[in-house]
Image 1 (cartoon, helix red, strand yellow):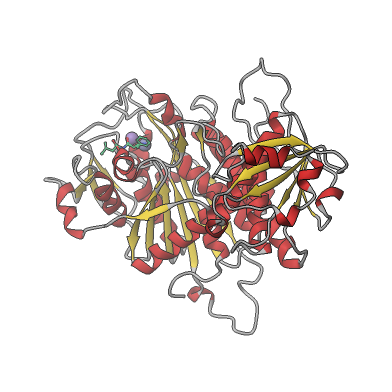
Image 2 (cartoon, protein in one colour; image 1 turned 90 degrees about the vertical axis):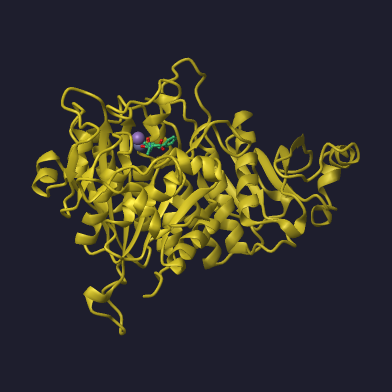
Amino acid sequence: MLTVHQTPAIVLTTRASSDIEADLLVFPVFEDDTLADEADLNAASGGEVAAARARGEITGKVSGLFITAVRGWKASRVALVGVGPRKDVTPDRLRRAATIGALAARQRRLTSIAIVHRPGTSVDAPGAAQVLAEGAVLANFDGAAYRTTDPPRVWLETVQLRVGGESAAVARASERGRVLGECTNLSRALSNEPGNTLTPKVFAERAVGIATDAGLAVEILDETRIADLKMGLLLGVARGSQEPPRLVVLRHEPPQAATGGERRAATRQPVLGLIGKGVTFDTGGISIKPADDMDRMKDDMSGGAAVLCAMAAISRLKAPVRCVAVIPMTENMPGGRAFKPGDVLTSAEGKTVEVLNTDAEGRLILGDAIWYARQLGATHLVDIATLTGSCIVALGKTATGLFGTPDEWVAQVRRAGDRAGERSWPMPVFDDYKELFKSEIADFANTGGRAGGAITAALFLKEFSGDLPWVHMDIAGTAWADQAAPHQPKGATGVGVRTLAELALDGQLFGS
Ligand code: BES
Ligand code: MN
Ligand code: ZN
């Protein structure tokens, strides 16, 4: 397997544009731009910039890209990347502009860039430092891990940032962006990994490596421990596979949590519980999926990868909140020993489930995992899963479905997602829809029919939340890009890593 990502050095600079040494200098450009703050740029380009604007090649429209050589500057080329009208510039537009500029450099086999934060937008210097670092790191990713015929890949080695000020806050923000970008890339790499190379066992081993590097406490529960805990839902899904299941537990104990004058009793401290679906391949089981696009189901562990890589970021950035993560890992396979429609499974908590469709496996393994996160002391729950095709129908491919209770907790997760540049949208959890997955012989069934399928899936998970504040993120649509976009390659997106990390970096969990 080839290296699929590499993290460049991020360096802050305050130099004038003419004085920055880099292969490519990247400027965001607005629709209503006079470039007055970069008065020498046009002359350095030999008039190319003014000419290109006059003929409408540089418009400032979002994602537009223009590259030209410059003379008399220490840099050899400049890239102008459109970010829309100046007043509408958001951190996310800057993040994307940074990715586009950085990708343009890599495509030209250039290894050093500098990105300039232009004045006059609502984004402050630390805010810009974070998203520009993030965007540049996200560009240093190439998912073709098994292509042996490509020329050697070129990685960005250095990214300089000029954000209009150098301070401790700017330095911290750029470090935060670097780590969040790197952890997103780690998660993408895991999700792109095929089902034959990333089995539950291998996924658990990779989790240990990533967690150890990040300074997290990590524990793997094997099939025997899982059986001791009587996790009948996870074991039921795993039955059809030759590959044994795993349950990975990660813990982050912030250094600040147990110190300070206003120390609260350890039991009263909030604990963020993160739970991620880790189905390393979902065939559907006996309720088998159609062949078309089944290959995509190698990414059905994207929620688990997001939790793992968010925890790595949380630990590396020393988030001030205690966190515990639980990632159930299994394949969902048909086979002689596989669980079957009509089977009744008993969860670790004791609740019984009638399996009407073995393809609704995510909610089963999450049921046991959410319960376990509560056993481990979680006070606030967030689960993340490629859970339902129904959520894609409801929200499309670029918004994560948010379900949960109470509304304030859902809103806090949504704000974290907005800061992360990961759009999410609240969905209802109507209690009376529980009727839809009633069972004749067990506590409830694992499916509720086509209508409201994303909502009934969420309600199923809620049964295991013990009435704690709980949010469910359905990333079935957002985990995988079917098409490449200017800022994002085809394939795994790493969605959720930055939302969950931003949430823990908040410091204050709802109500605590
Ligand atoms: N992993 C799938 C959900 C999914 C579908 C993710 C498409 C990404 C793209 C999940 O396990 C599943 O199969 N869900 C079923 C549930 C149904 C059987 C109630 C679905 O959505 O069809
Ligand atoms: Mn399924
Ligand atoms: Zn699935």
